[in-house]
Amino acid sequence: MTAAHEVQGQIRAVQGTLDDLGTPLSEVTFVVVDLETTGGSAADSAITEIGAVKVRGGAELGELGTLVDPGGPVPPFITALTGITTAMVTAAPRMDAVLPAFLEFARGSVLVAHNAPFDIGFLKAACAAGGYAWPAFPVVDTVDLARRVLGKDEVPNCKLGTLARFFRTRTEPTHRALADARATVEVLHGLIERLGSFGVTTLEELRGFAKAPTPEQRRKRHLAEGVPSTPGVYLFEDAGGEVLYVGKSGDLRSRVRSYFTGSETRPRVREMVGLAENVRTIVCATGLEAEVRELRLIAEHKPRYNRRSKFPERAIWLKLTAEPFPRLSIVRECRDDGARYLGPISSRRQAEEARAALHEAVPLRQCTQRLTVRIVERGRARSCALADLGRCGAPCDGRESPDAYAVHAETARAIMEGDVRPVVAAARVRIDRLAAELRYEEAAAQRDRLAAFVRAAARGQRLAALARLPELVAARPGFDGGWDLSVVRYGRLAAAGTVPPHAHPRPYVDALIATAETVFPPSGGAPGGVALGAPPSSGATAEEMECVLRWLDLPGVRLVEVDGAWTCPVHGAEGLRGWIDNAYTSHDPDRAGRPLR
Image (cartoon, rainbow, N blue to C red; front, top):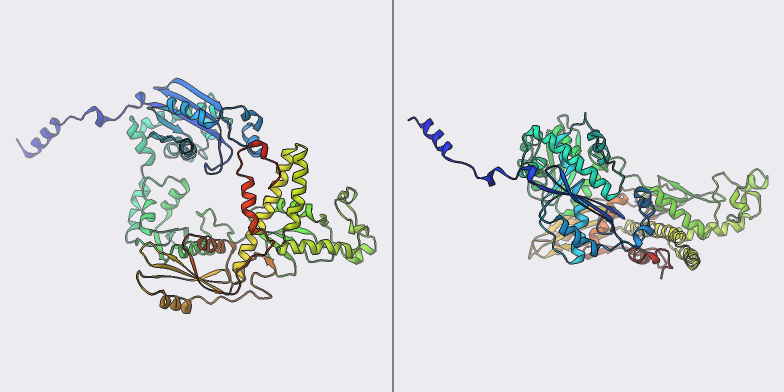
């Protein structure tokens, strides 16, 4: 007998066990679950409805569906999306009563969900809140399966509605939990049928298939070779040197290698990996330096695969115009034009809410026509409906003199410069009145306006305070027993370094200050310009300054040197942020519009 025959004989002598073959999909019990919630994060939102369908071998074994009292009002945009109102969930059971029934219903099964991290995250949070240990459910995500099985020529995206239309499900997704769970069951069956052509017949093969790296990812693994295990920034580049993607990490080697494994399932990122021909790394001294360098590189290169790459430096501002009869305007650029600015603000909707809150406190004109004293005196201006309703003093037709209107403008200017008390007082009067009349939804709308204003003003005041400082040096304990150092000038990170363990920090601090980037103060006035929170002309964007402020707020950070006064206005909004946030934490739906205390 030849050696080859001996080997073949040995192979024939080994027979696999049933465990080696895995669990046939036809014998697996799947519980397909879908949730409706009050928001997108389990940290600050709650479940309003749960739906689950149990299936095995293509046959339905049972269903579970119920509304859930989230312990607070259902936001209007959620009601518009799902049709679930606060009145519908008021009499529903709380999650602590529903959770045990769901856990028993799902016991011993494989959980399936469309975008599973969302639903599973809420269920895990509910278990933690209720004191239950999360069972070790195997989880299958139909989004991951669809991304591997279906091509772009078949479906434009992997939304549940898109997949339901593709597989022609009998149940149409309606953003209601049980209906969406039923639709997901049919989508799951359609995907499993497709998986047969890939040779996937067991649960183990199913779960491994969804997370397996693509051939392109496996082929590009060499790009991670030589990447150091240090904090820093990495740039994926194509064959022509164009930057495709910029990221940061506390461990560059581990993070870059993850792009070439099955754990990376984002379609756009996998597409980017297919185009990449080089990974360039920039080693940074600290995590803060890596975060700031990432922001600057994204702003510089605008990589097409970064979500934040399109105009990251642009922001929205609320502007009190510099004209004889000033008005409030929402703009996208902060200029040194003698006007007053509030911001930056995260969205136009928030800016509109903040403007409405300021209008409630100060009767500024809301029309957009150009007004001058000469135009008013000649009677060429036109009045609007707000003047007839008494919501405007009507300087346009002479009912309010220029001097009287100037008082309103000066009040608005003082508010935008830091004294927010008039806005808070006006909002509280309206909230108290509406709450006393049991008009809680209108009171909540007033609260939202006030919150938008306070948050915008607080953000601007924090940024402006940092932007005014010629120099700030701070230190934070490092993981190895040393120190992480940062030098900040006019809001811009000018240098970052470390102090080795057991070394005296003073020489390292002096050396870092001596070699730090030179940052010039803004031209034409105080740092931050005339805008409350405006970034200085040296290039420190609001986003970069917020990175620095978050770092300064971390436990253990110590101020080494501060050149100048680092303060916020005495009557500013910074001290009211906690008060506003507390108004949104109550789980009593009757407090939705009650007075802020």
